[in-house]
Image (cartoon, rainbow, N blue to C red; front, top):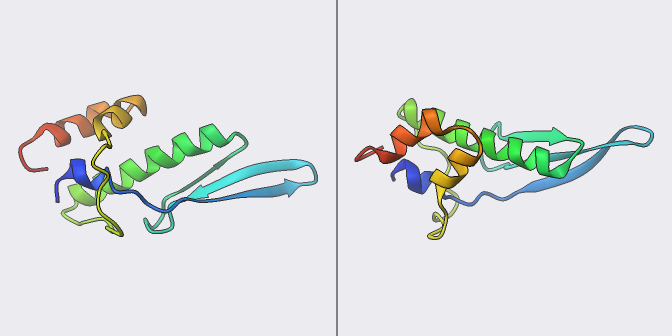
Length: 103
């Protein structure tokens, strides 16, 4: 499976609000099917952006090591990983891998 397809795999998202101290809450997000892929923060949008960045870094890192990430379901046909990579500031590292013949 090519990197573009691997980056389009939908993973289950777990979310929970955690009270660190009385009145101080944060959100924890994770893709439990992708080991080590978690993020937390006070703002949901920031935590989700960090989680997506982590997901891409984990998948790309595994591919660079010659390993395949977990594939719990088929890639989304309508996903555009290149847009996401650019939006998250990972273009320099990931775009060359997405544009090669067989990443």
